[in-house]
Length: 345
Image (cartoon, rainbow, N blue to C red; front, side, top):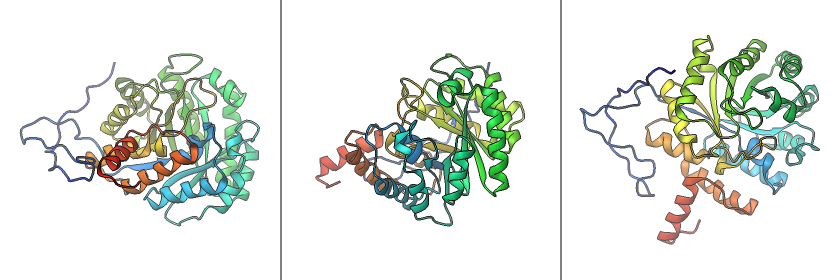
């Protein structure tokens, strides 16, 4: 059903030291040892979705100032692409009711790309007034999820987004496209490659510059990720236009990311602390944690430009703001390490 992954690689470099007793260290391998990672990129772009996709489903609604602290903190840590809010009706997503304040007040840096989700022309108009120069549209691969999420069939949603994308591009904005429920739908179950391809090609034809393939309910497994991504590429979609967006509901997100990297994907969506979940996908848990992804990439010798220590410091504060333990594995290890050595977090 799928091609065999390439298994030859250059020798792994020597291990690096770390304050966590191995955190971020590369594994050492003998010169004759077969390797799996010859196709992974040297650099990867982290696309931070915590301020939007992460916070939209939290029980505690962060005040605007805390959201700005979060956004500016991840940027200071080296993240150069961040989705800051969603211009949706606050009746449907109350946590995003302050979208105008967030987008208008954030301290922007010229070397960072800030994006916001827009569901329709009204949302696009709001994003325009707030000075956004990049927006994102979202569409599930299944009709049922689209009806539950945006109250439209897939065809109706595509018609709406053609207008939105055309207008956004006319205003000089870049447009990103999310395809959700790529690997499984909470209402329809298994999702075929044909359904994913139909939505992906439609969004690209409209003019989105990048497709984020979302595992909305966290059911994807490594062979499935390979099958879908290779299937899209075989159909003519440029691998450079593909990003991956995994929720860690069943603990497979990092394994799935590793497969995407082996195929050559260079953009990974993630959320600080492992925040998130979809309000219209029952049972969905948080996004894969940004610090977990960065730790793994650093250990593989892949550059991200992100400071892991700064990231985990943000997560530690964020858990206190939200009054709950965040699911980030690296955060838990960091807090345990600090407790063992008597370091104040």
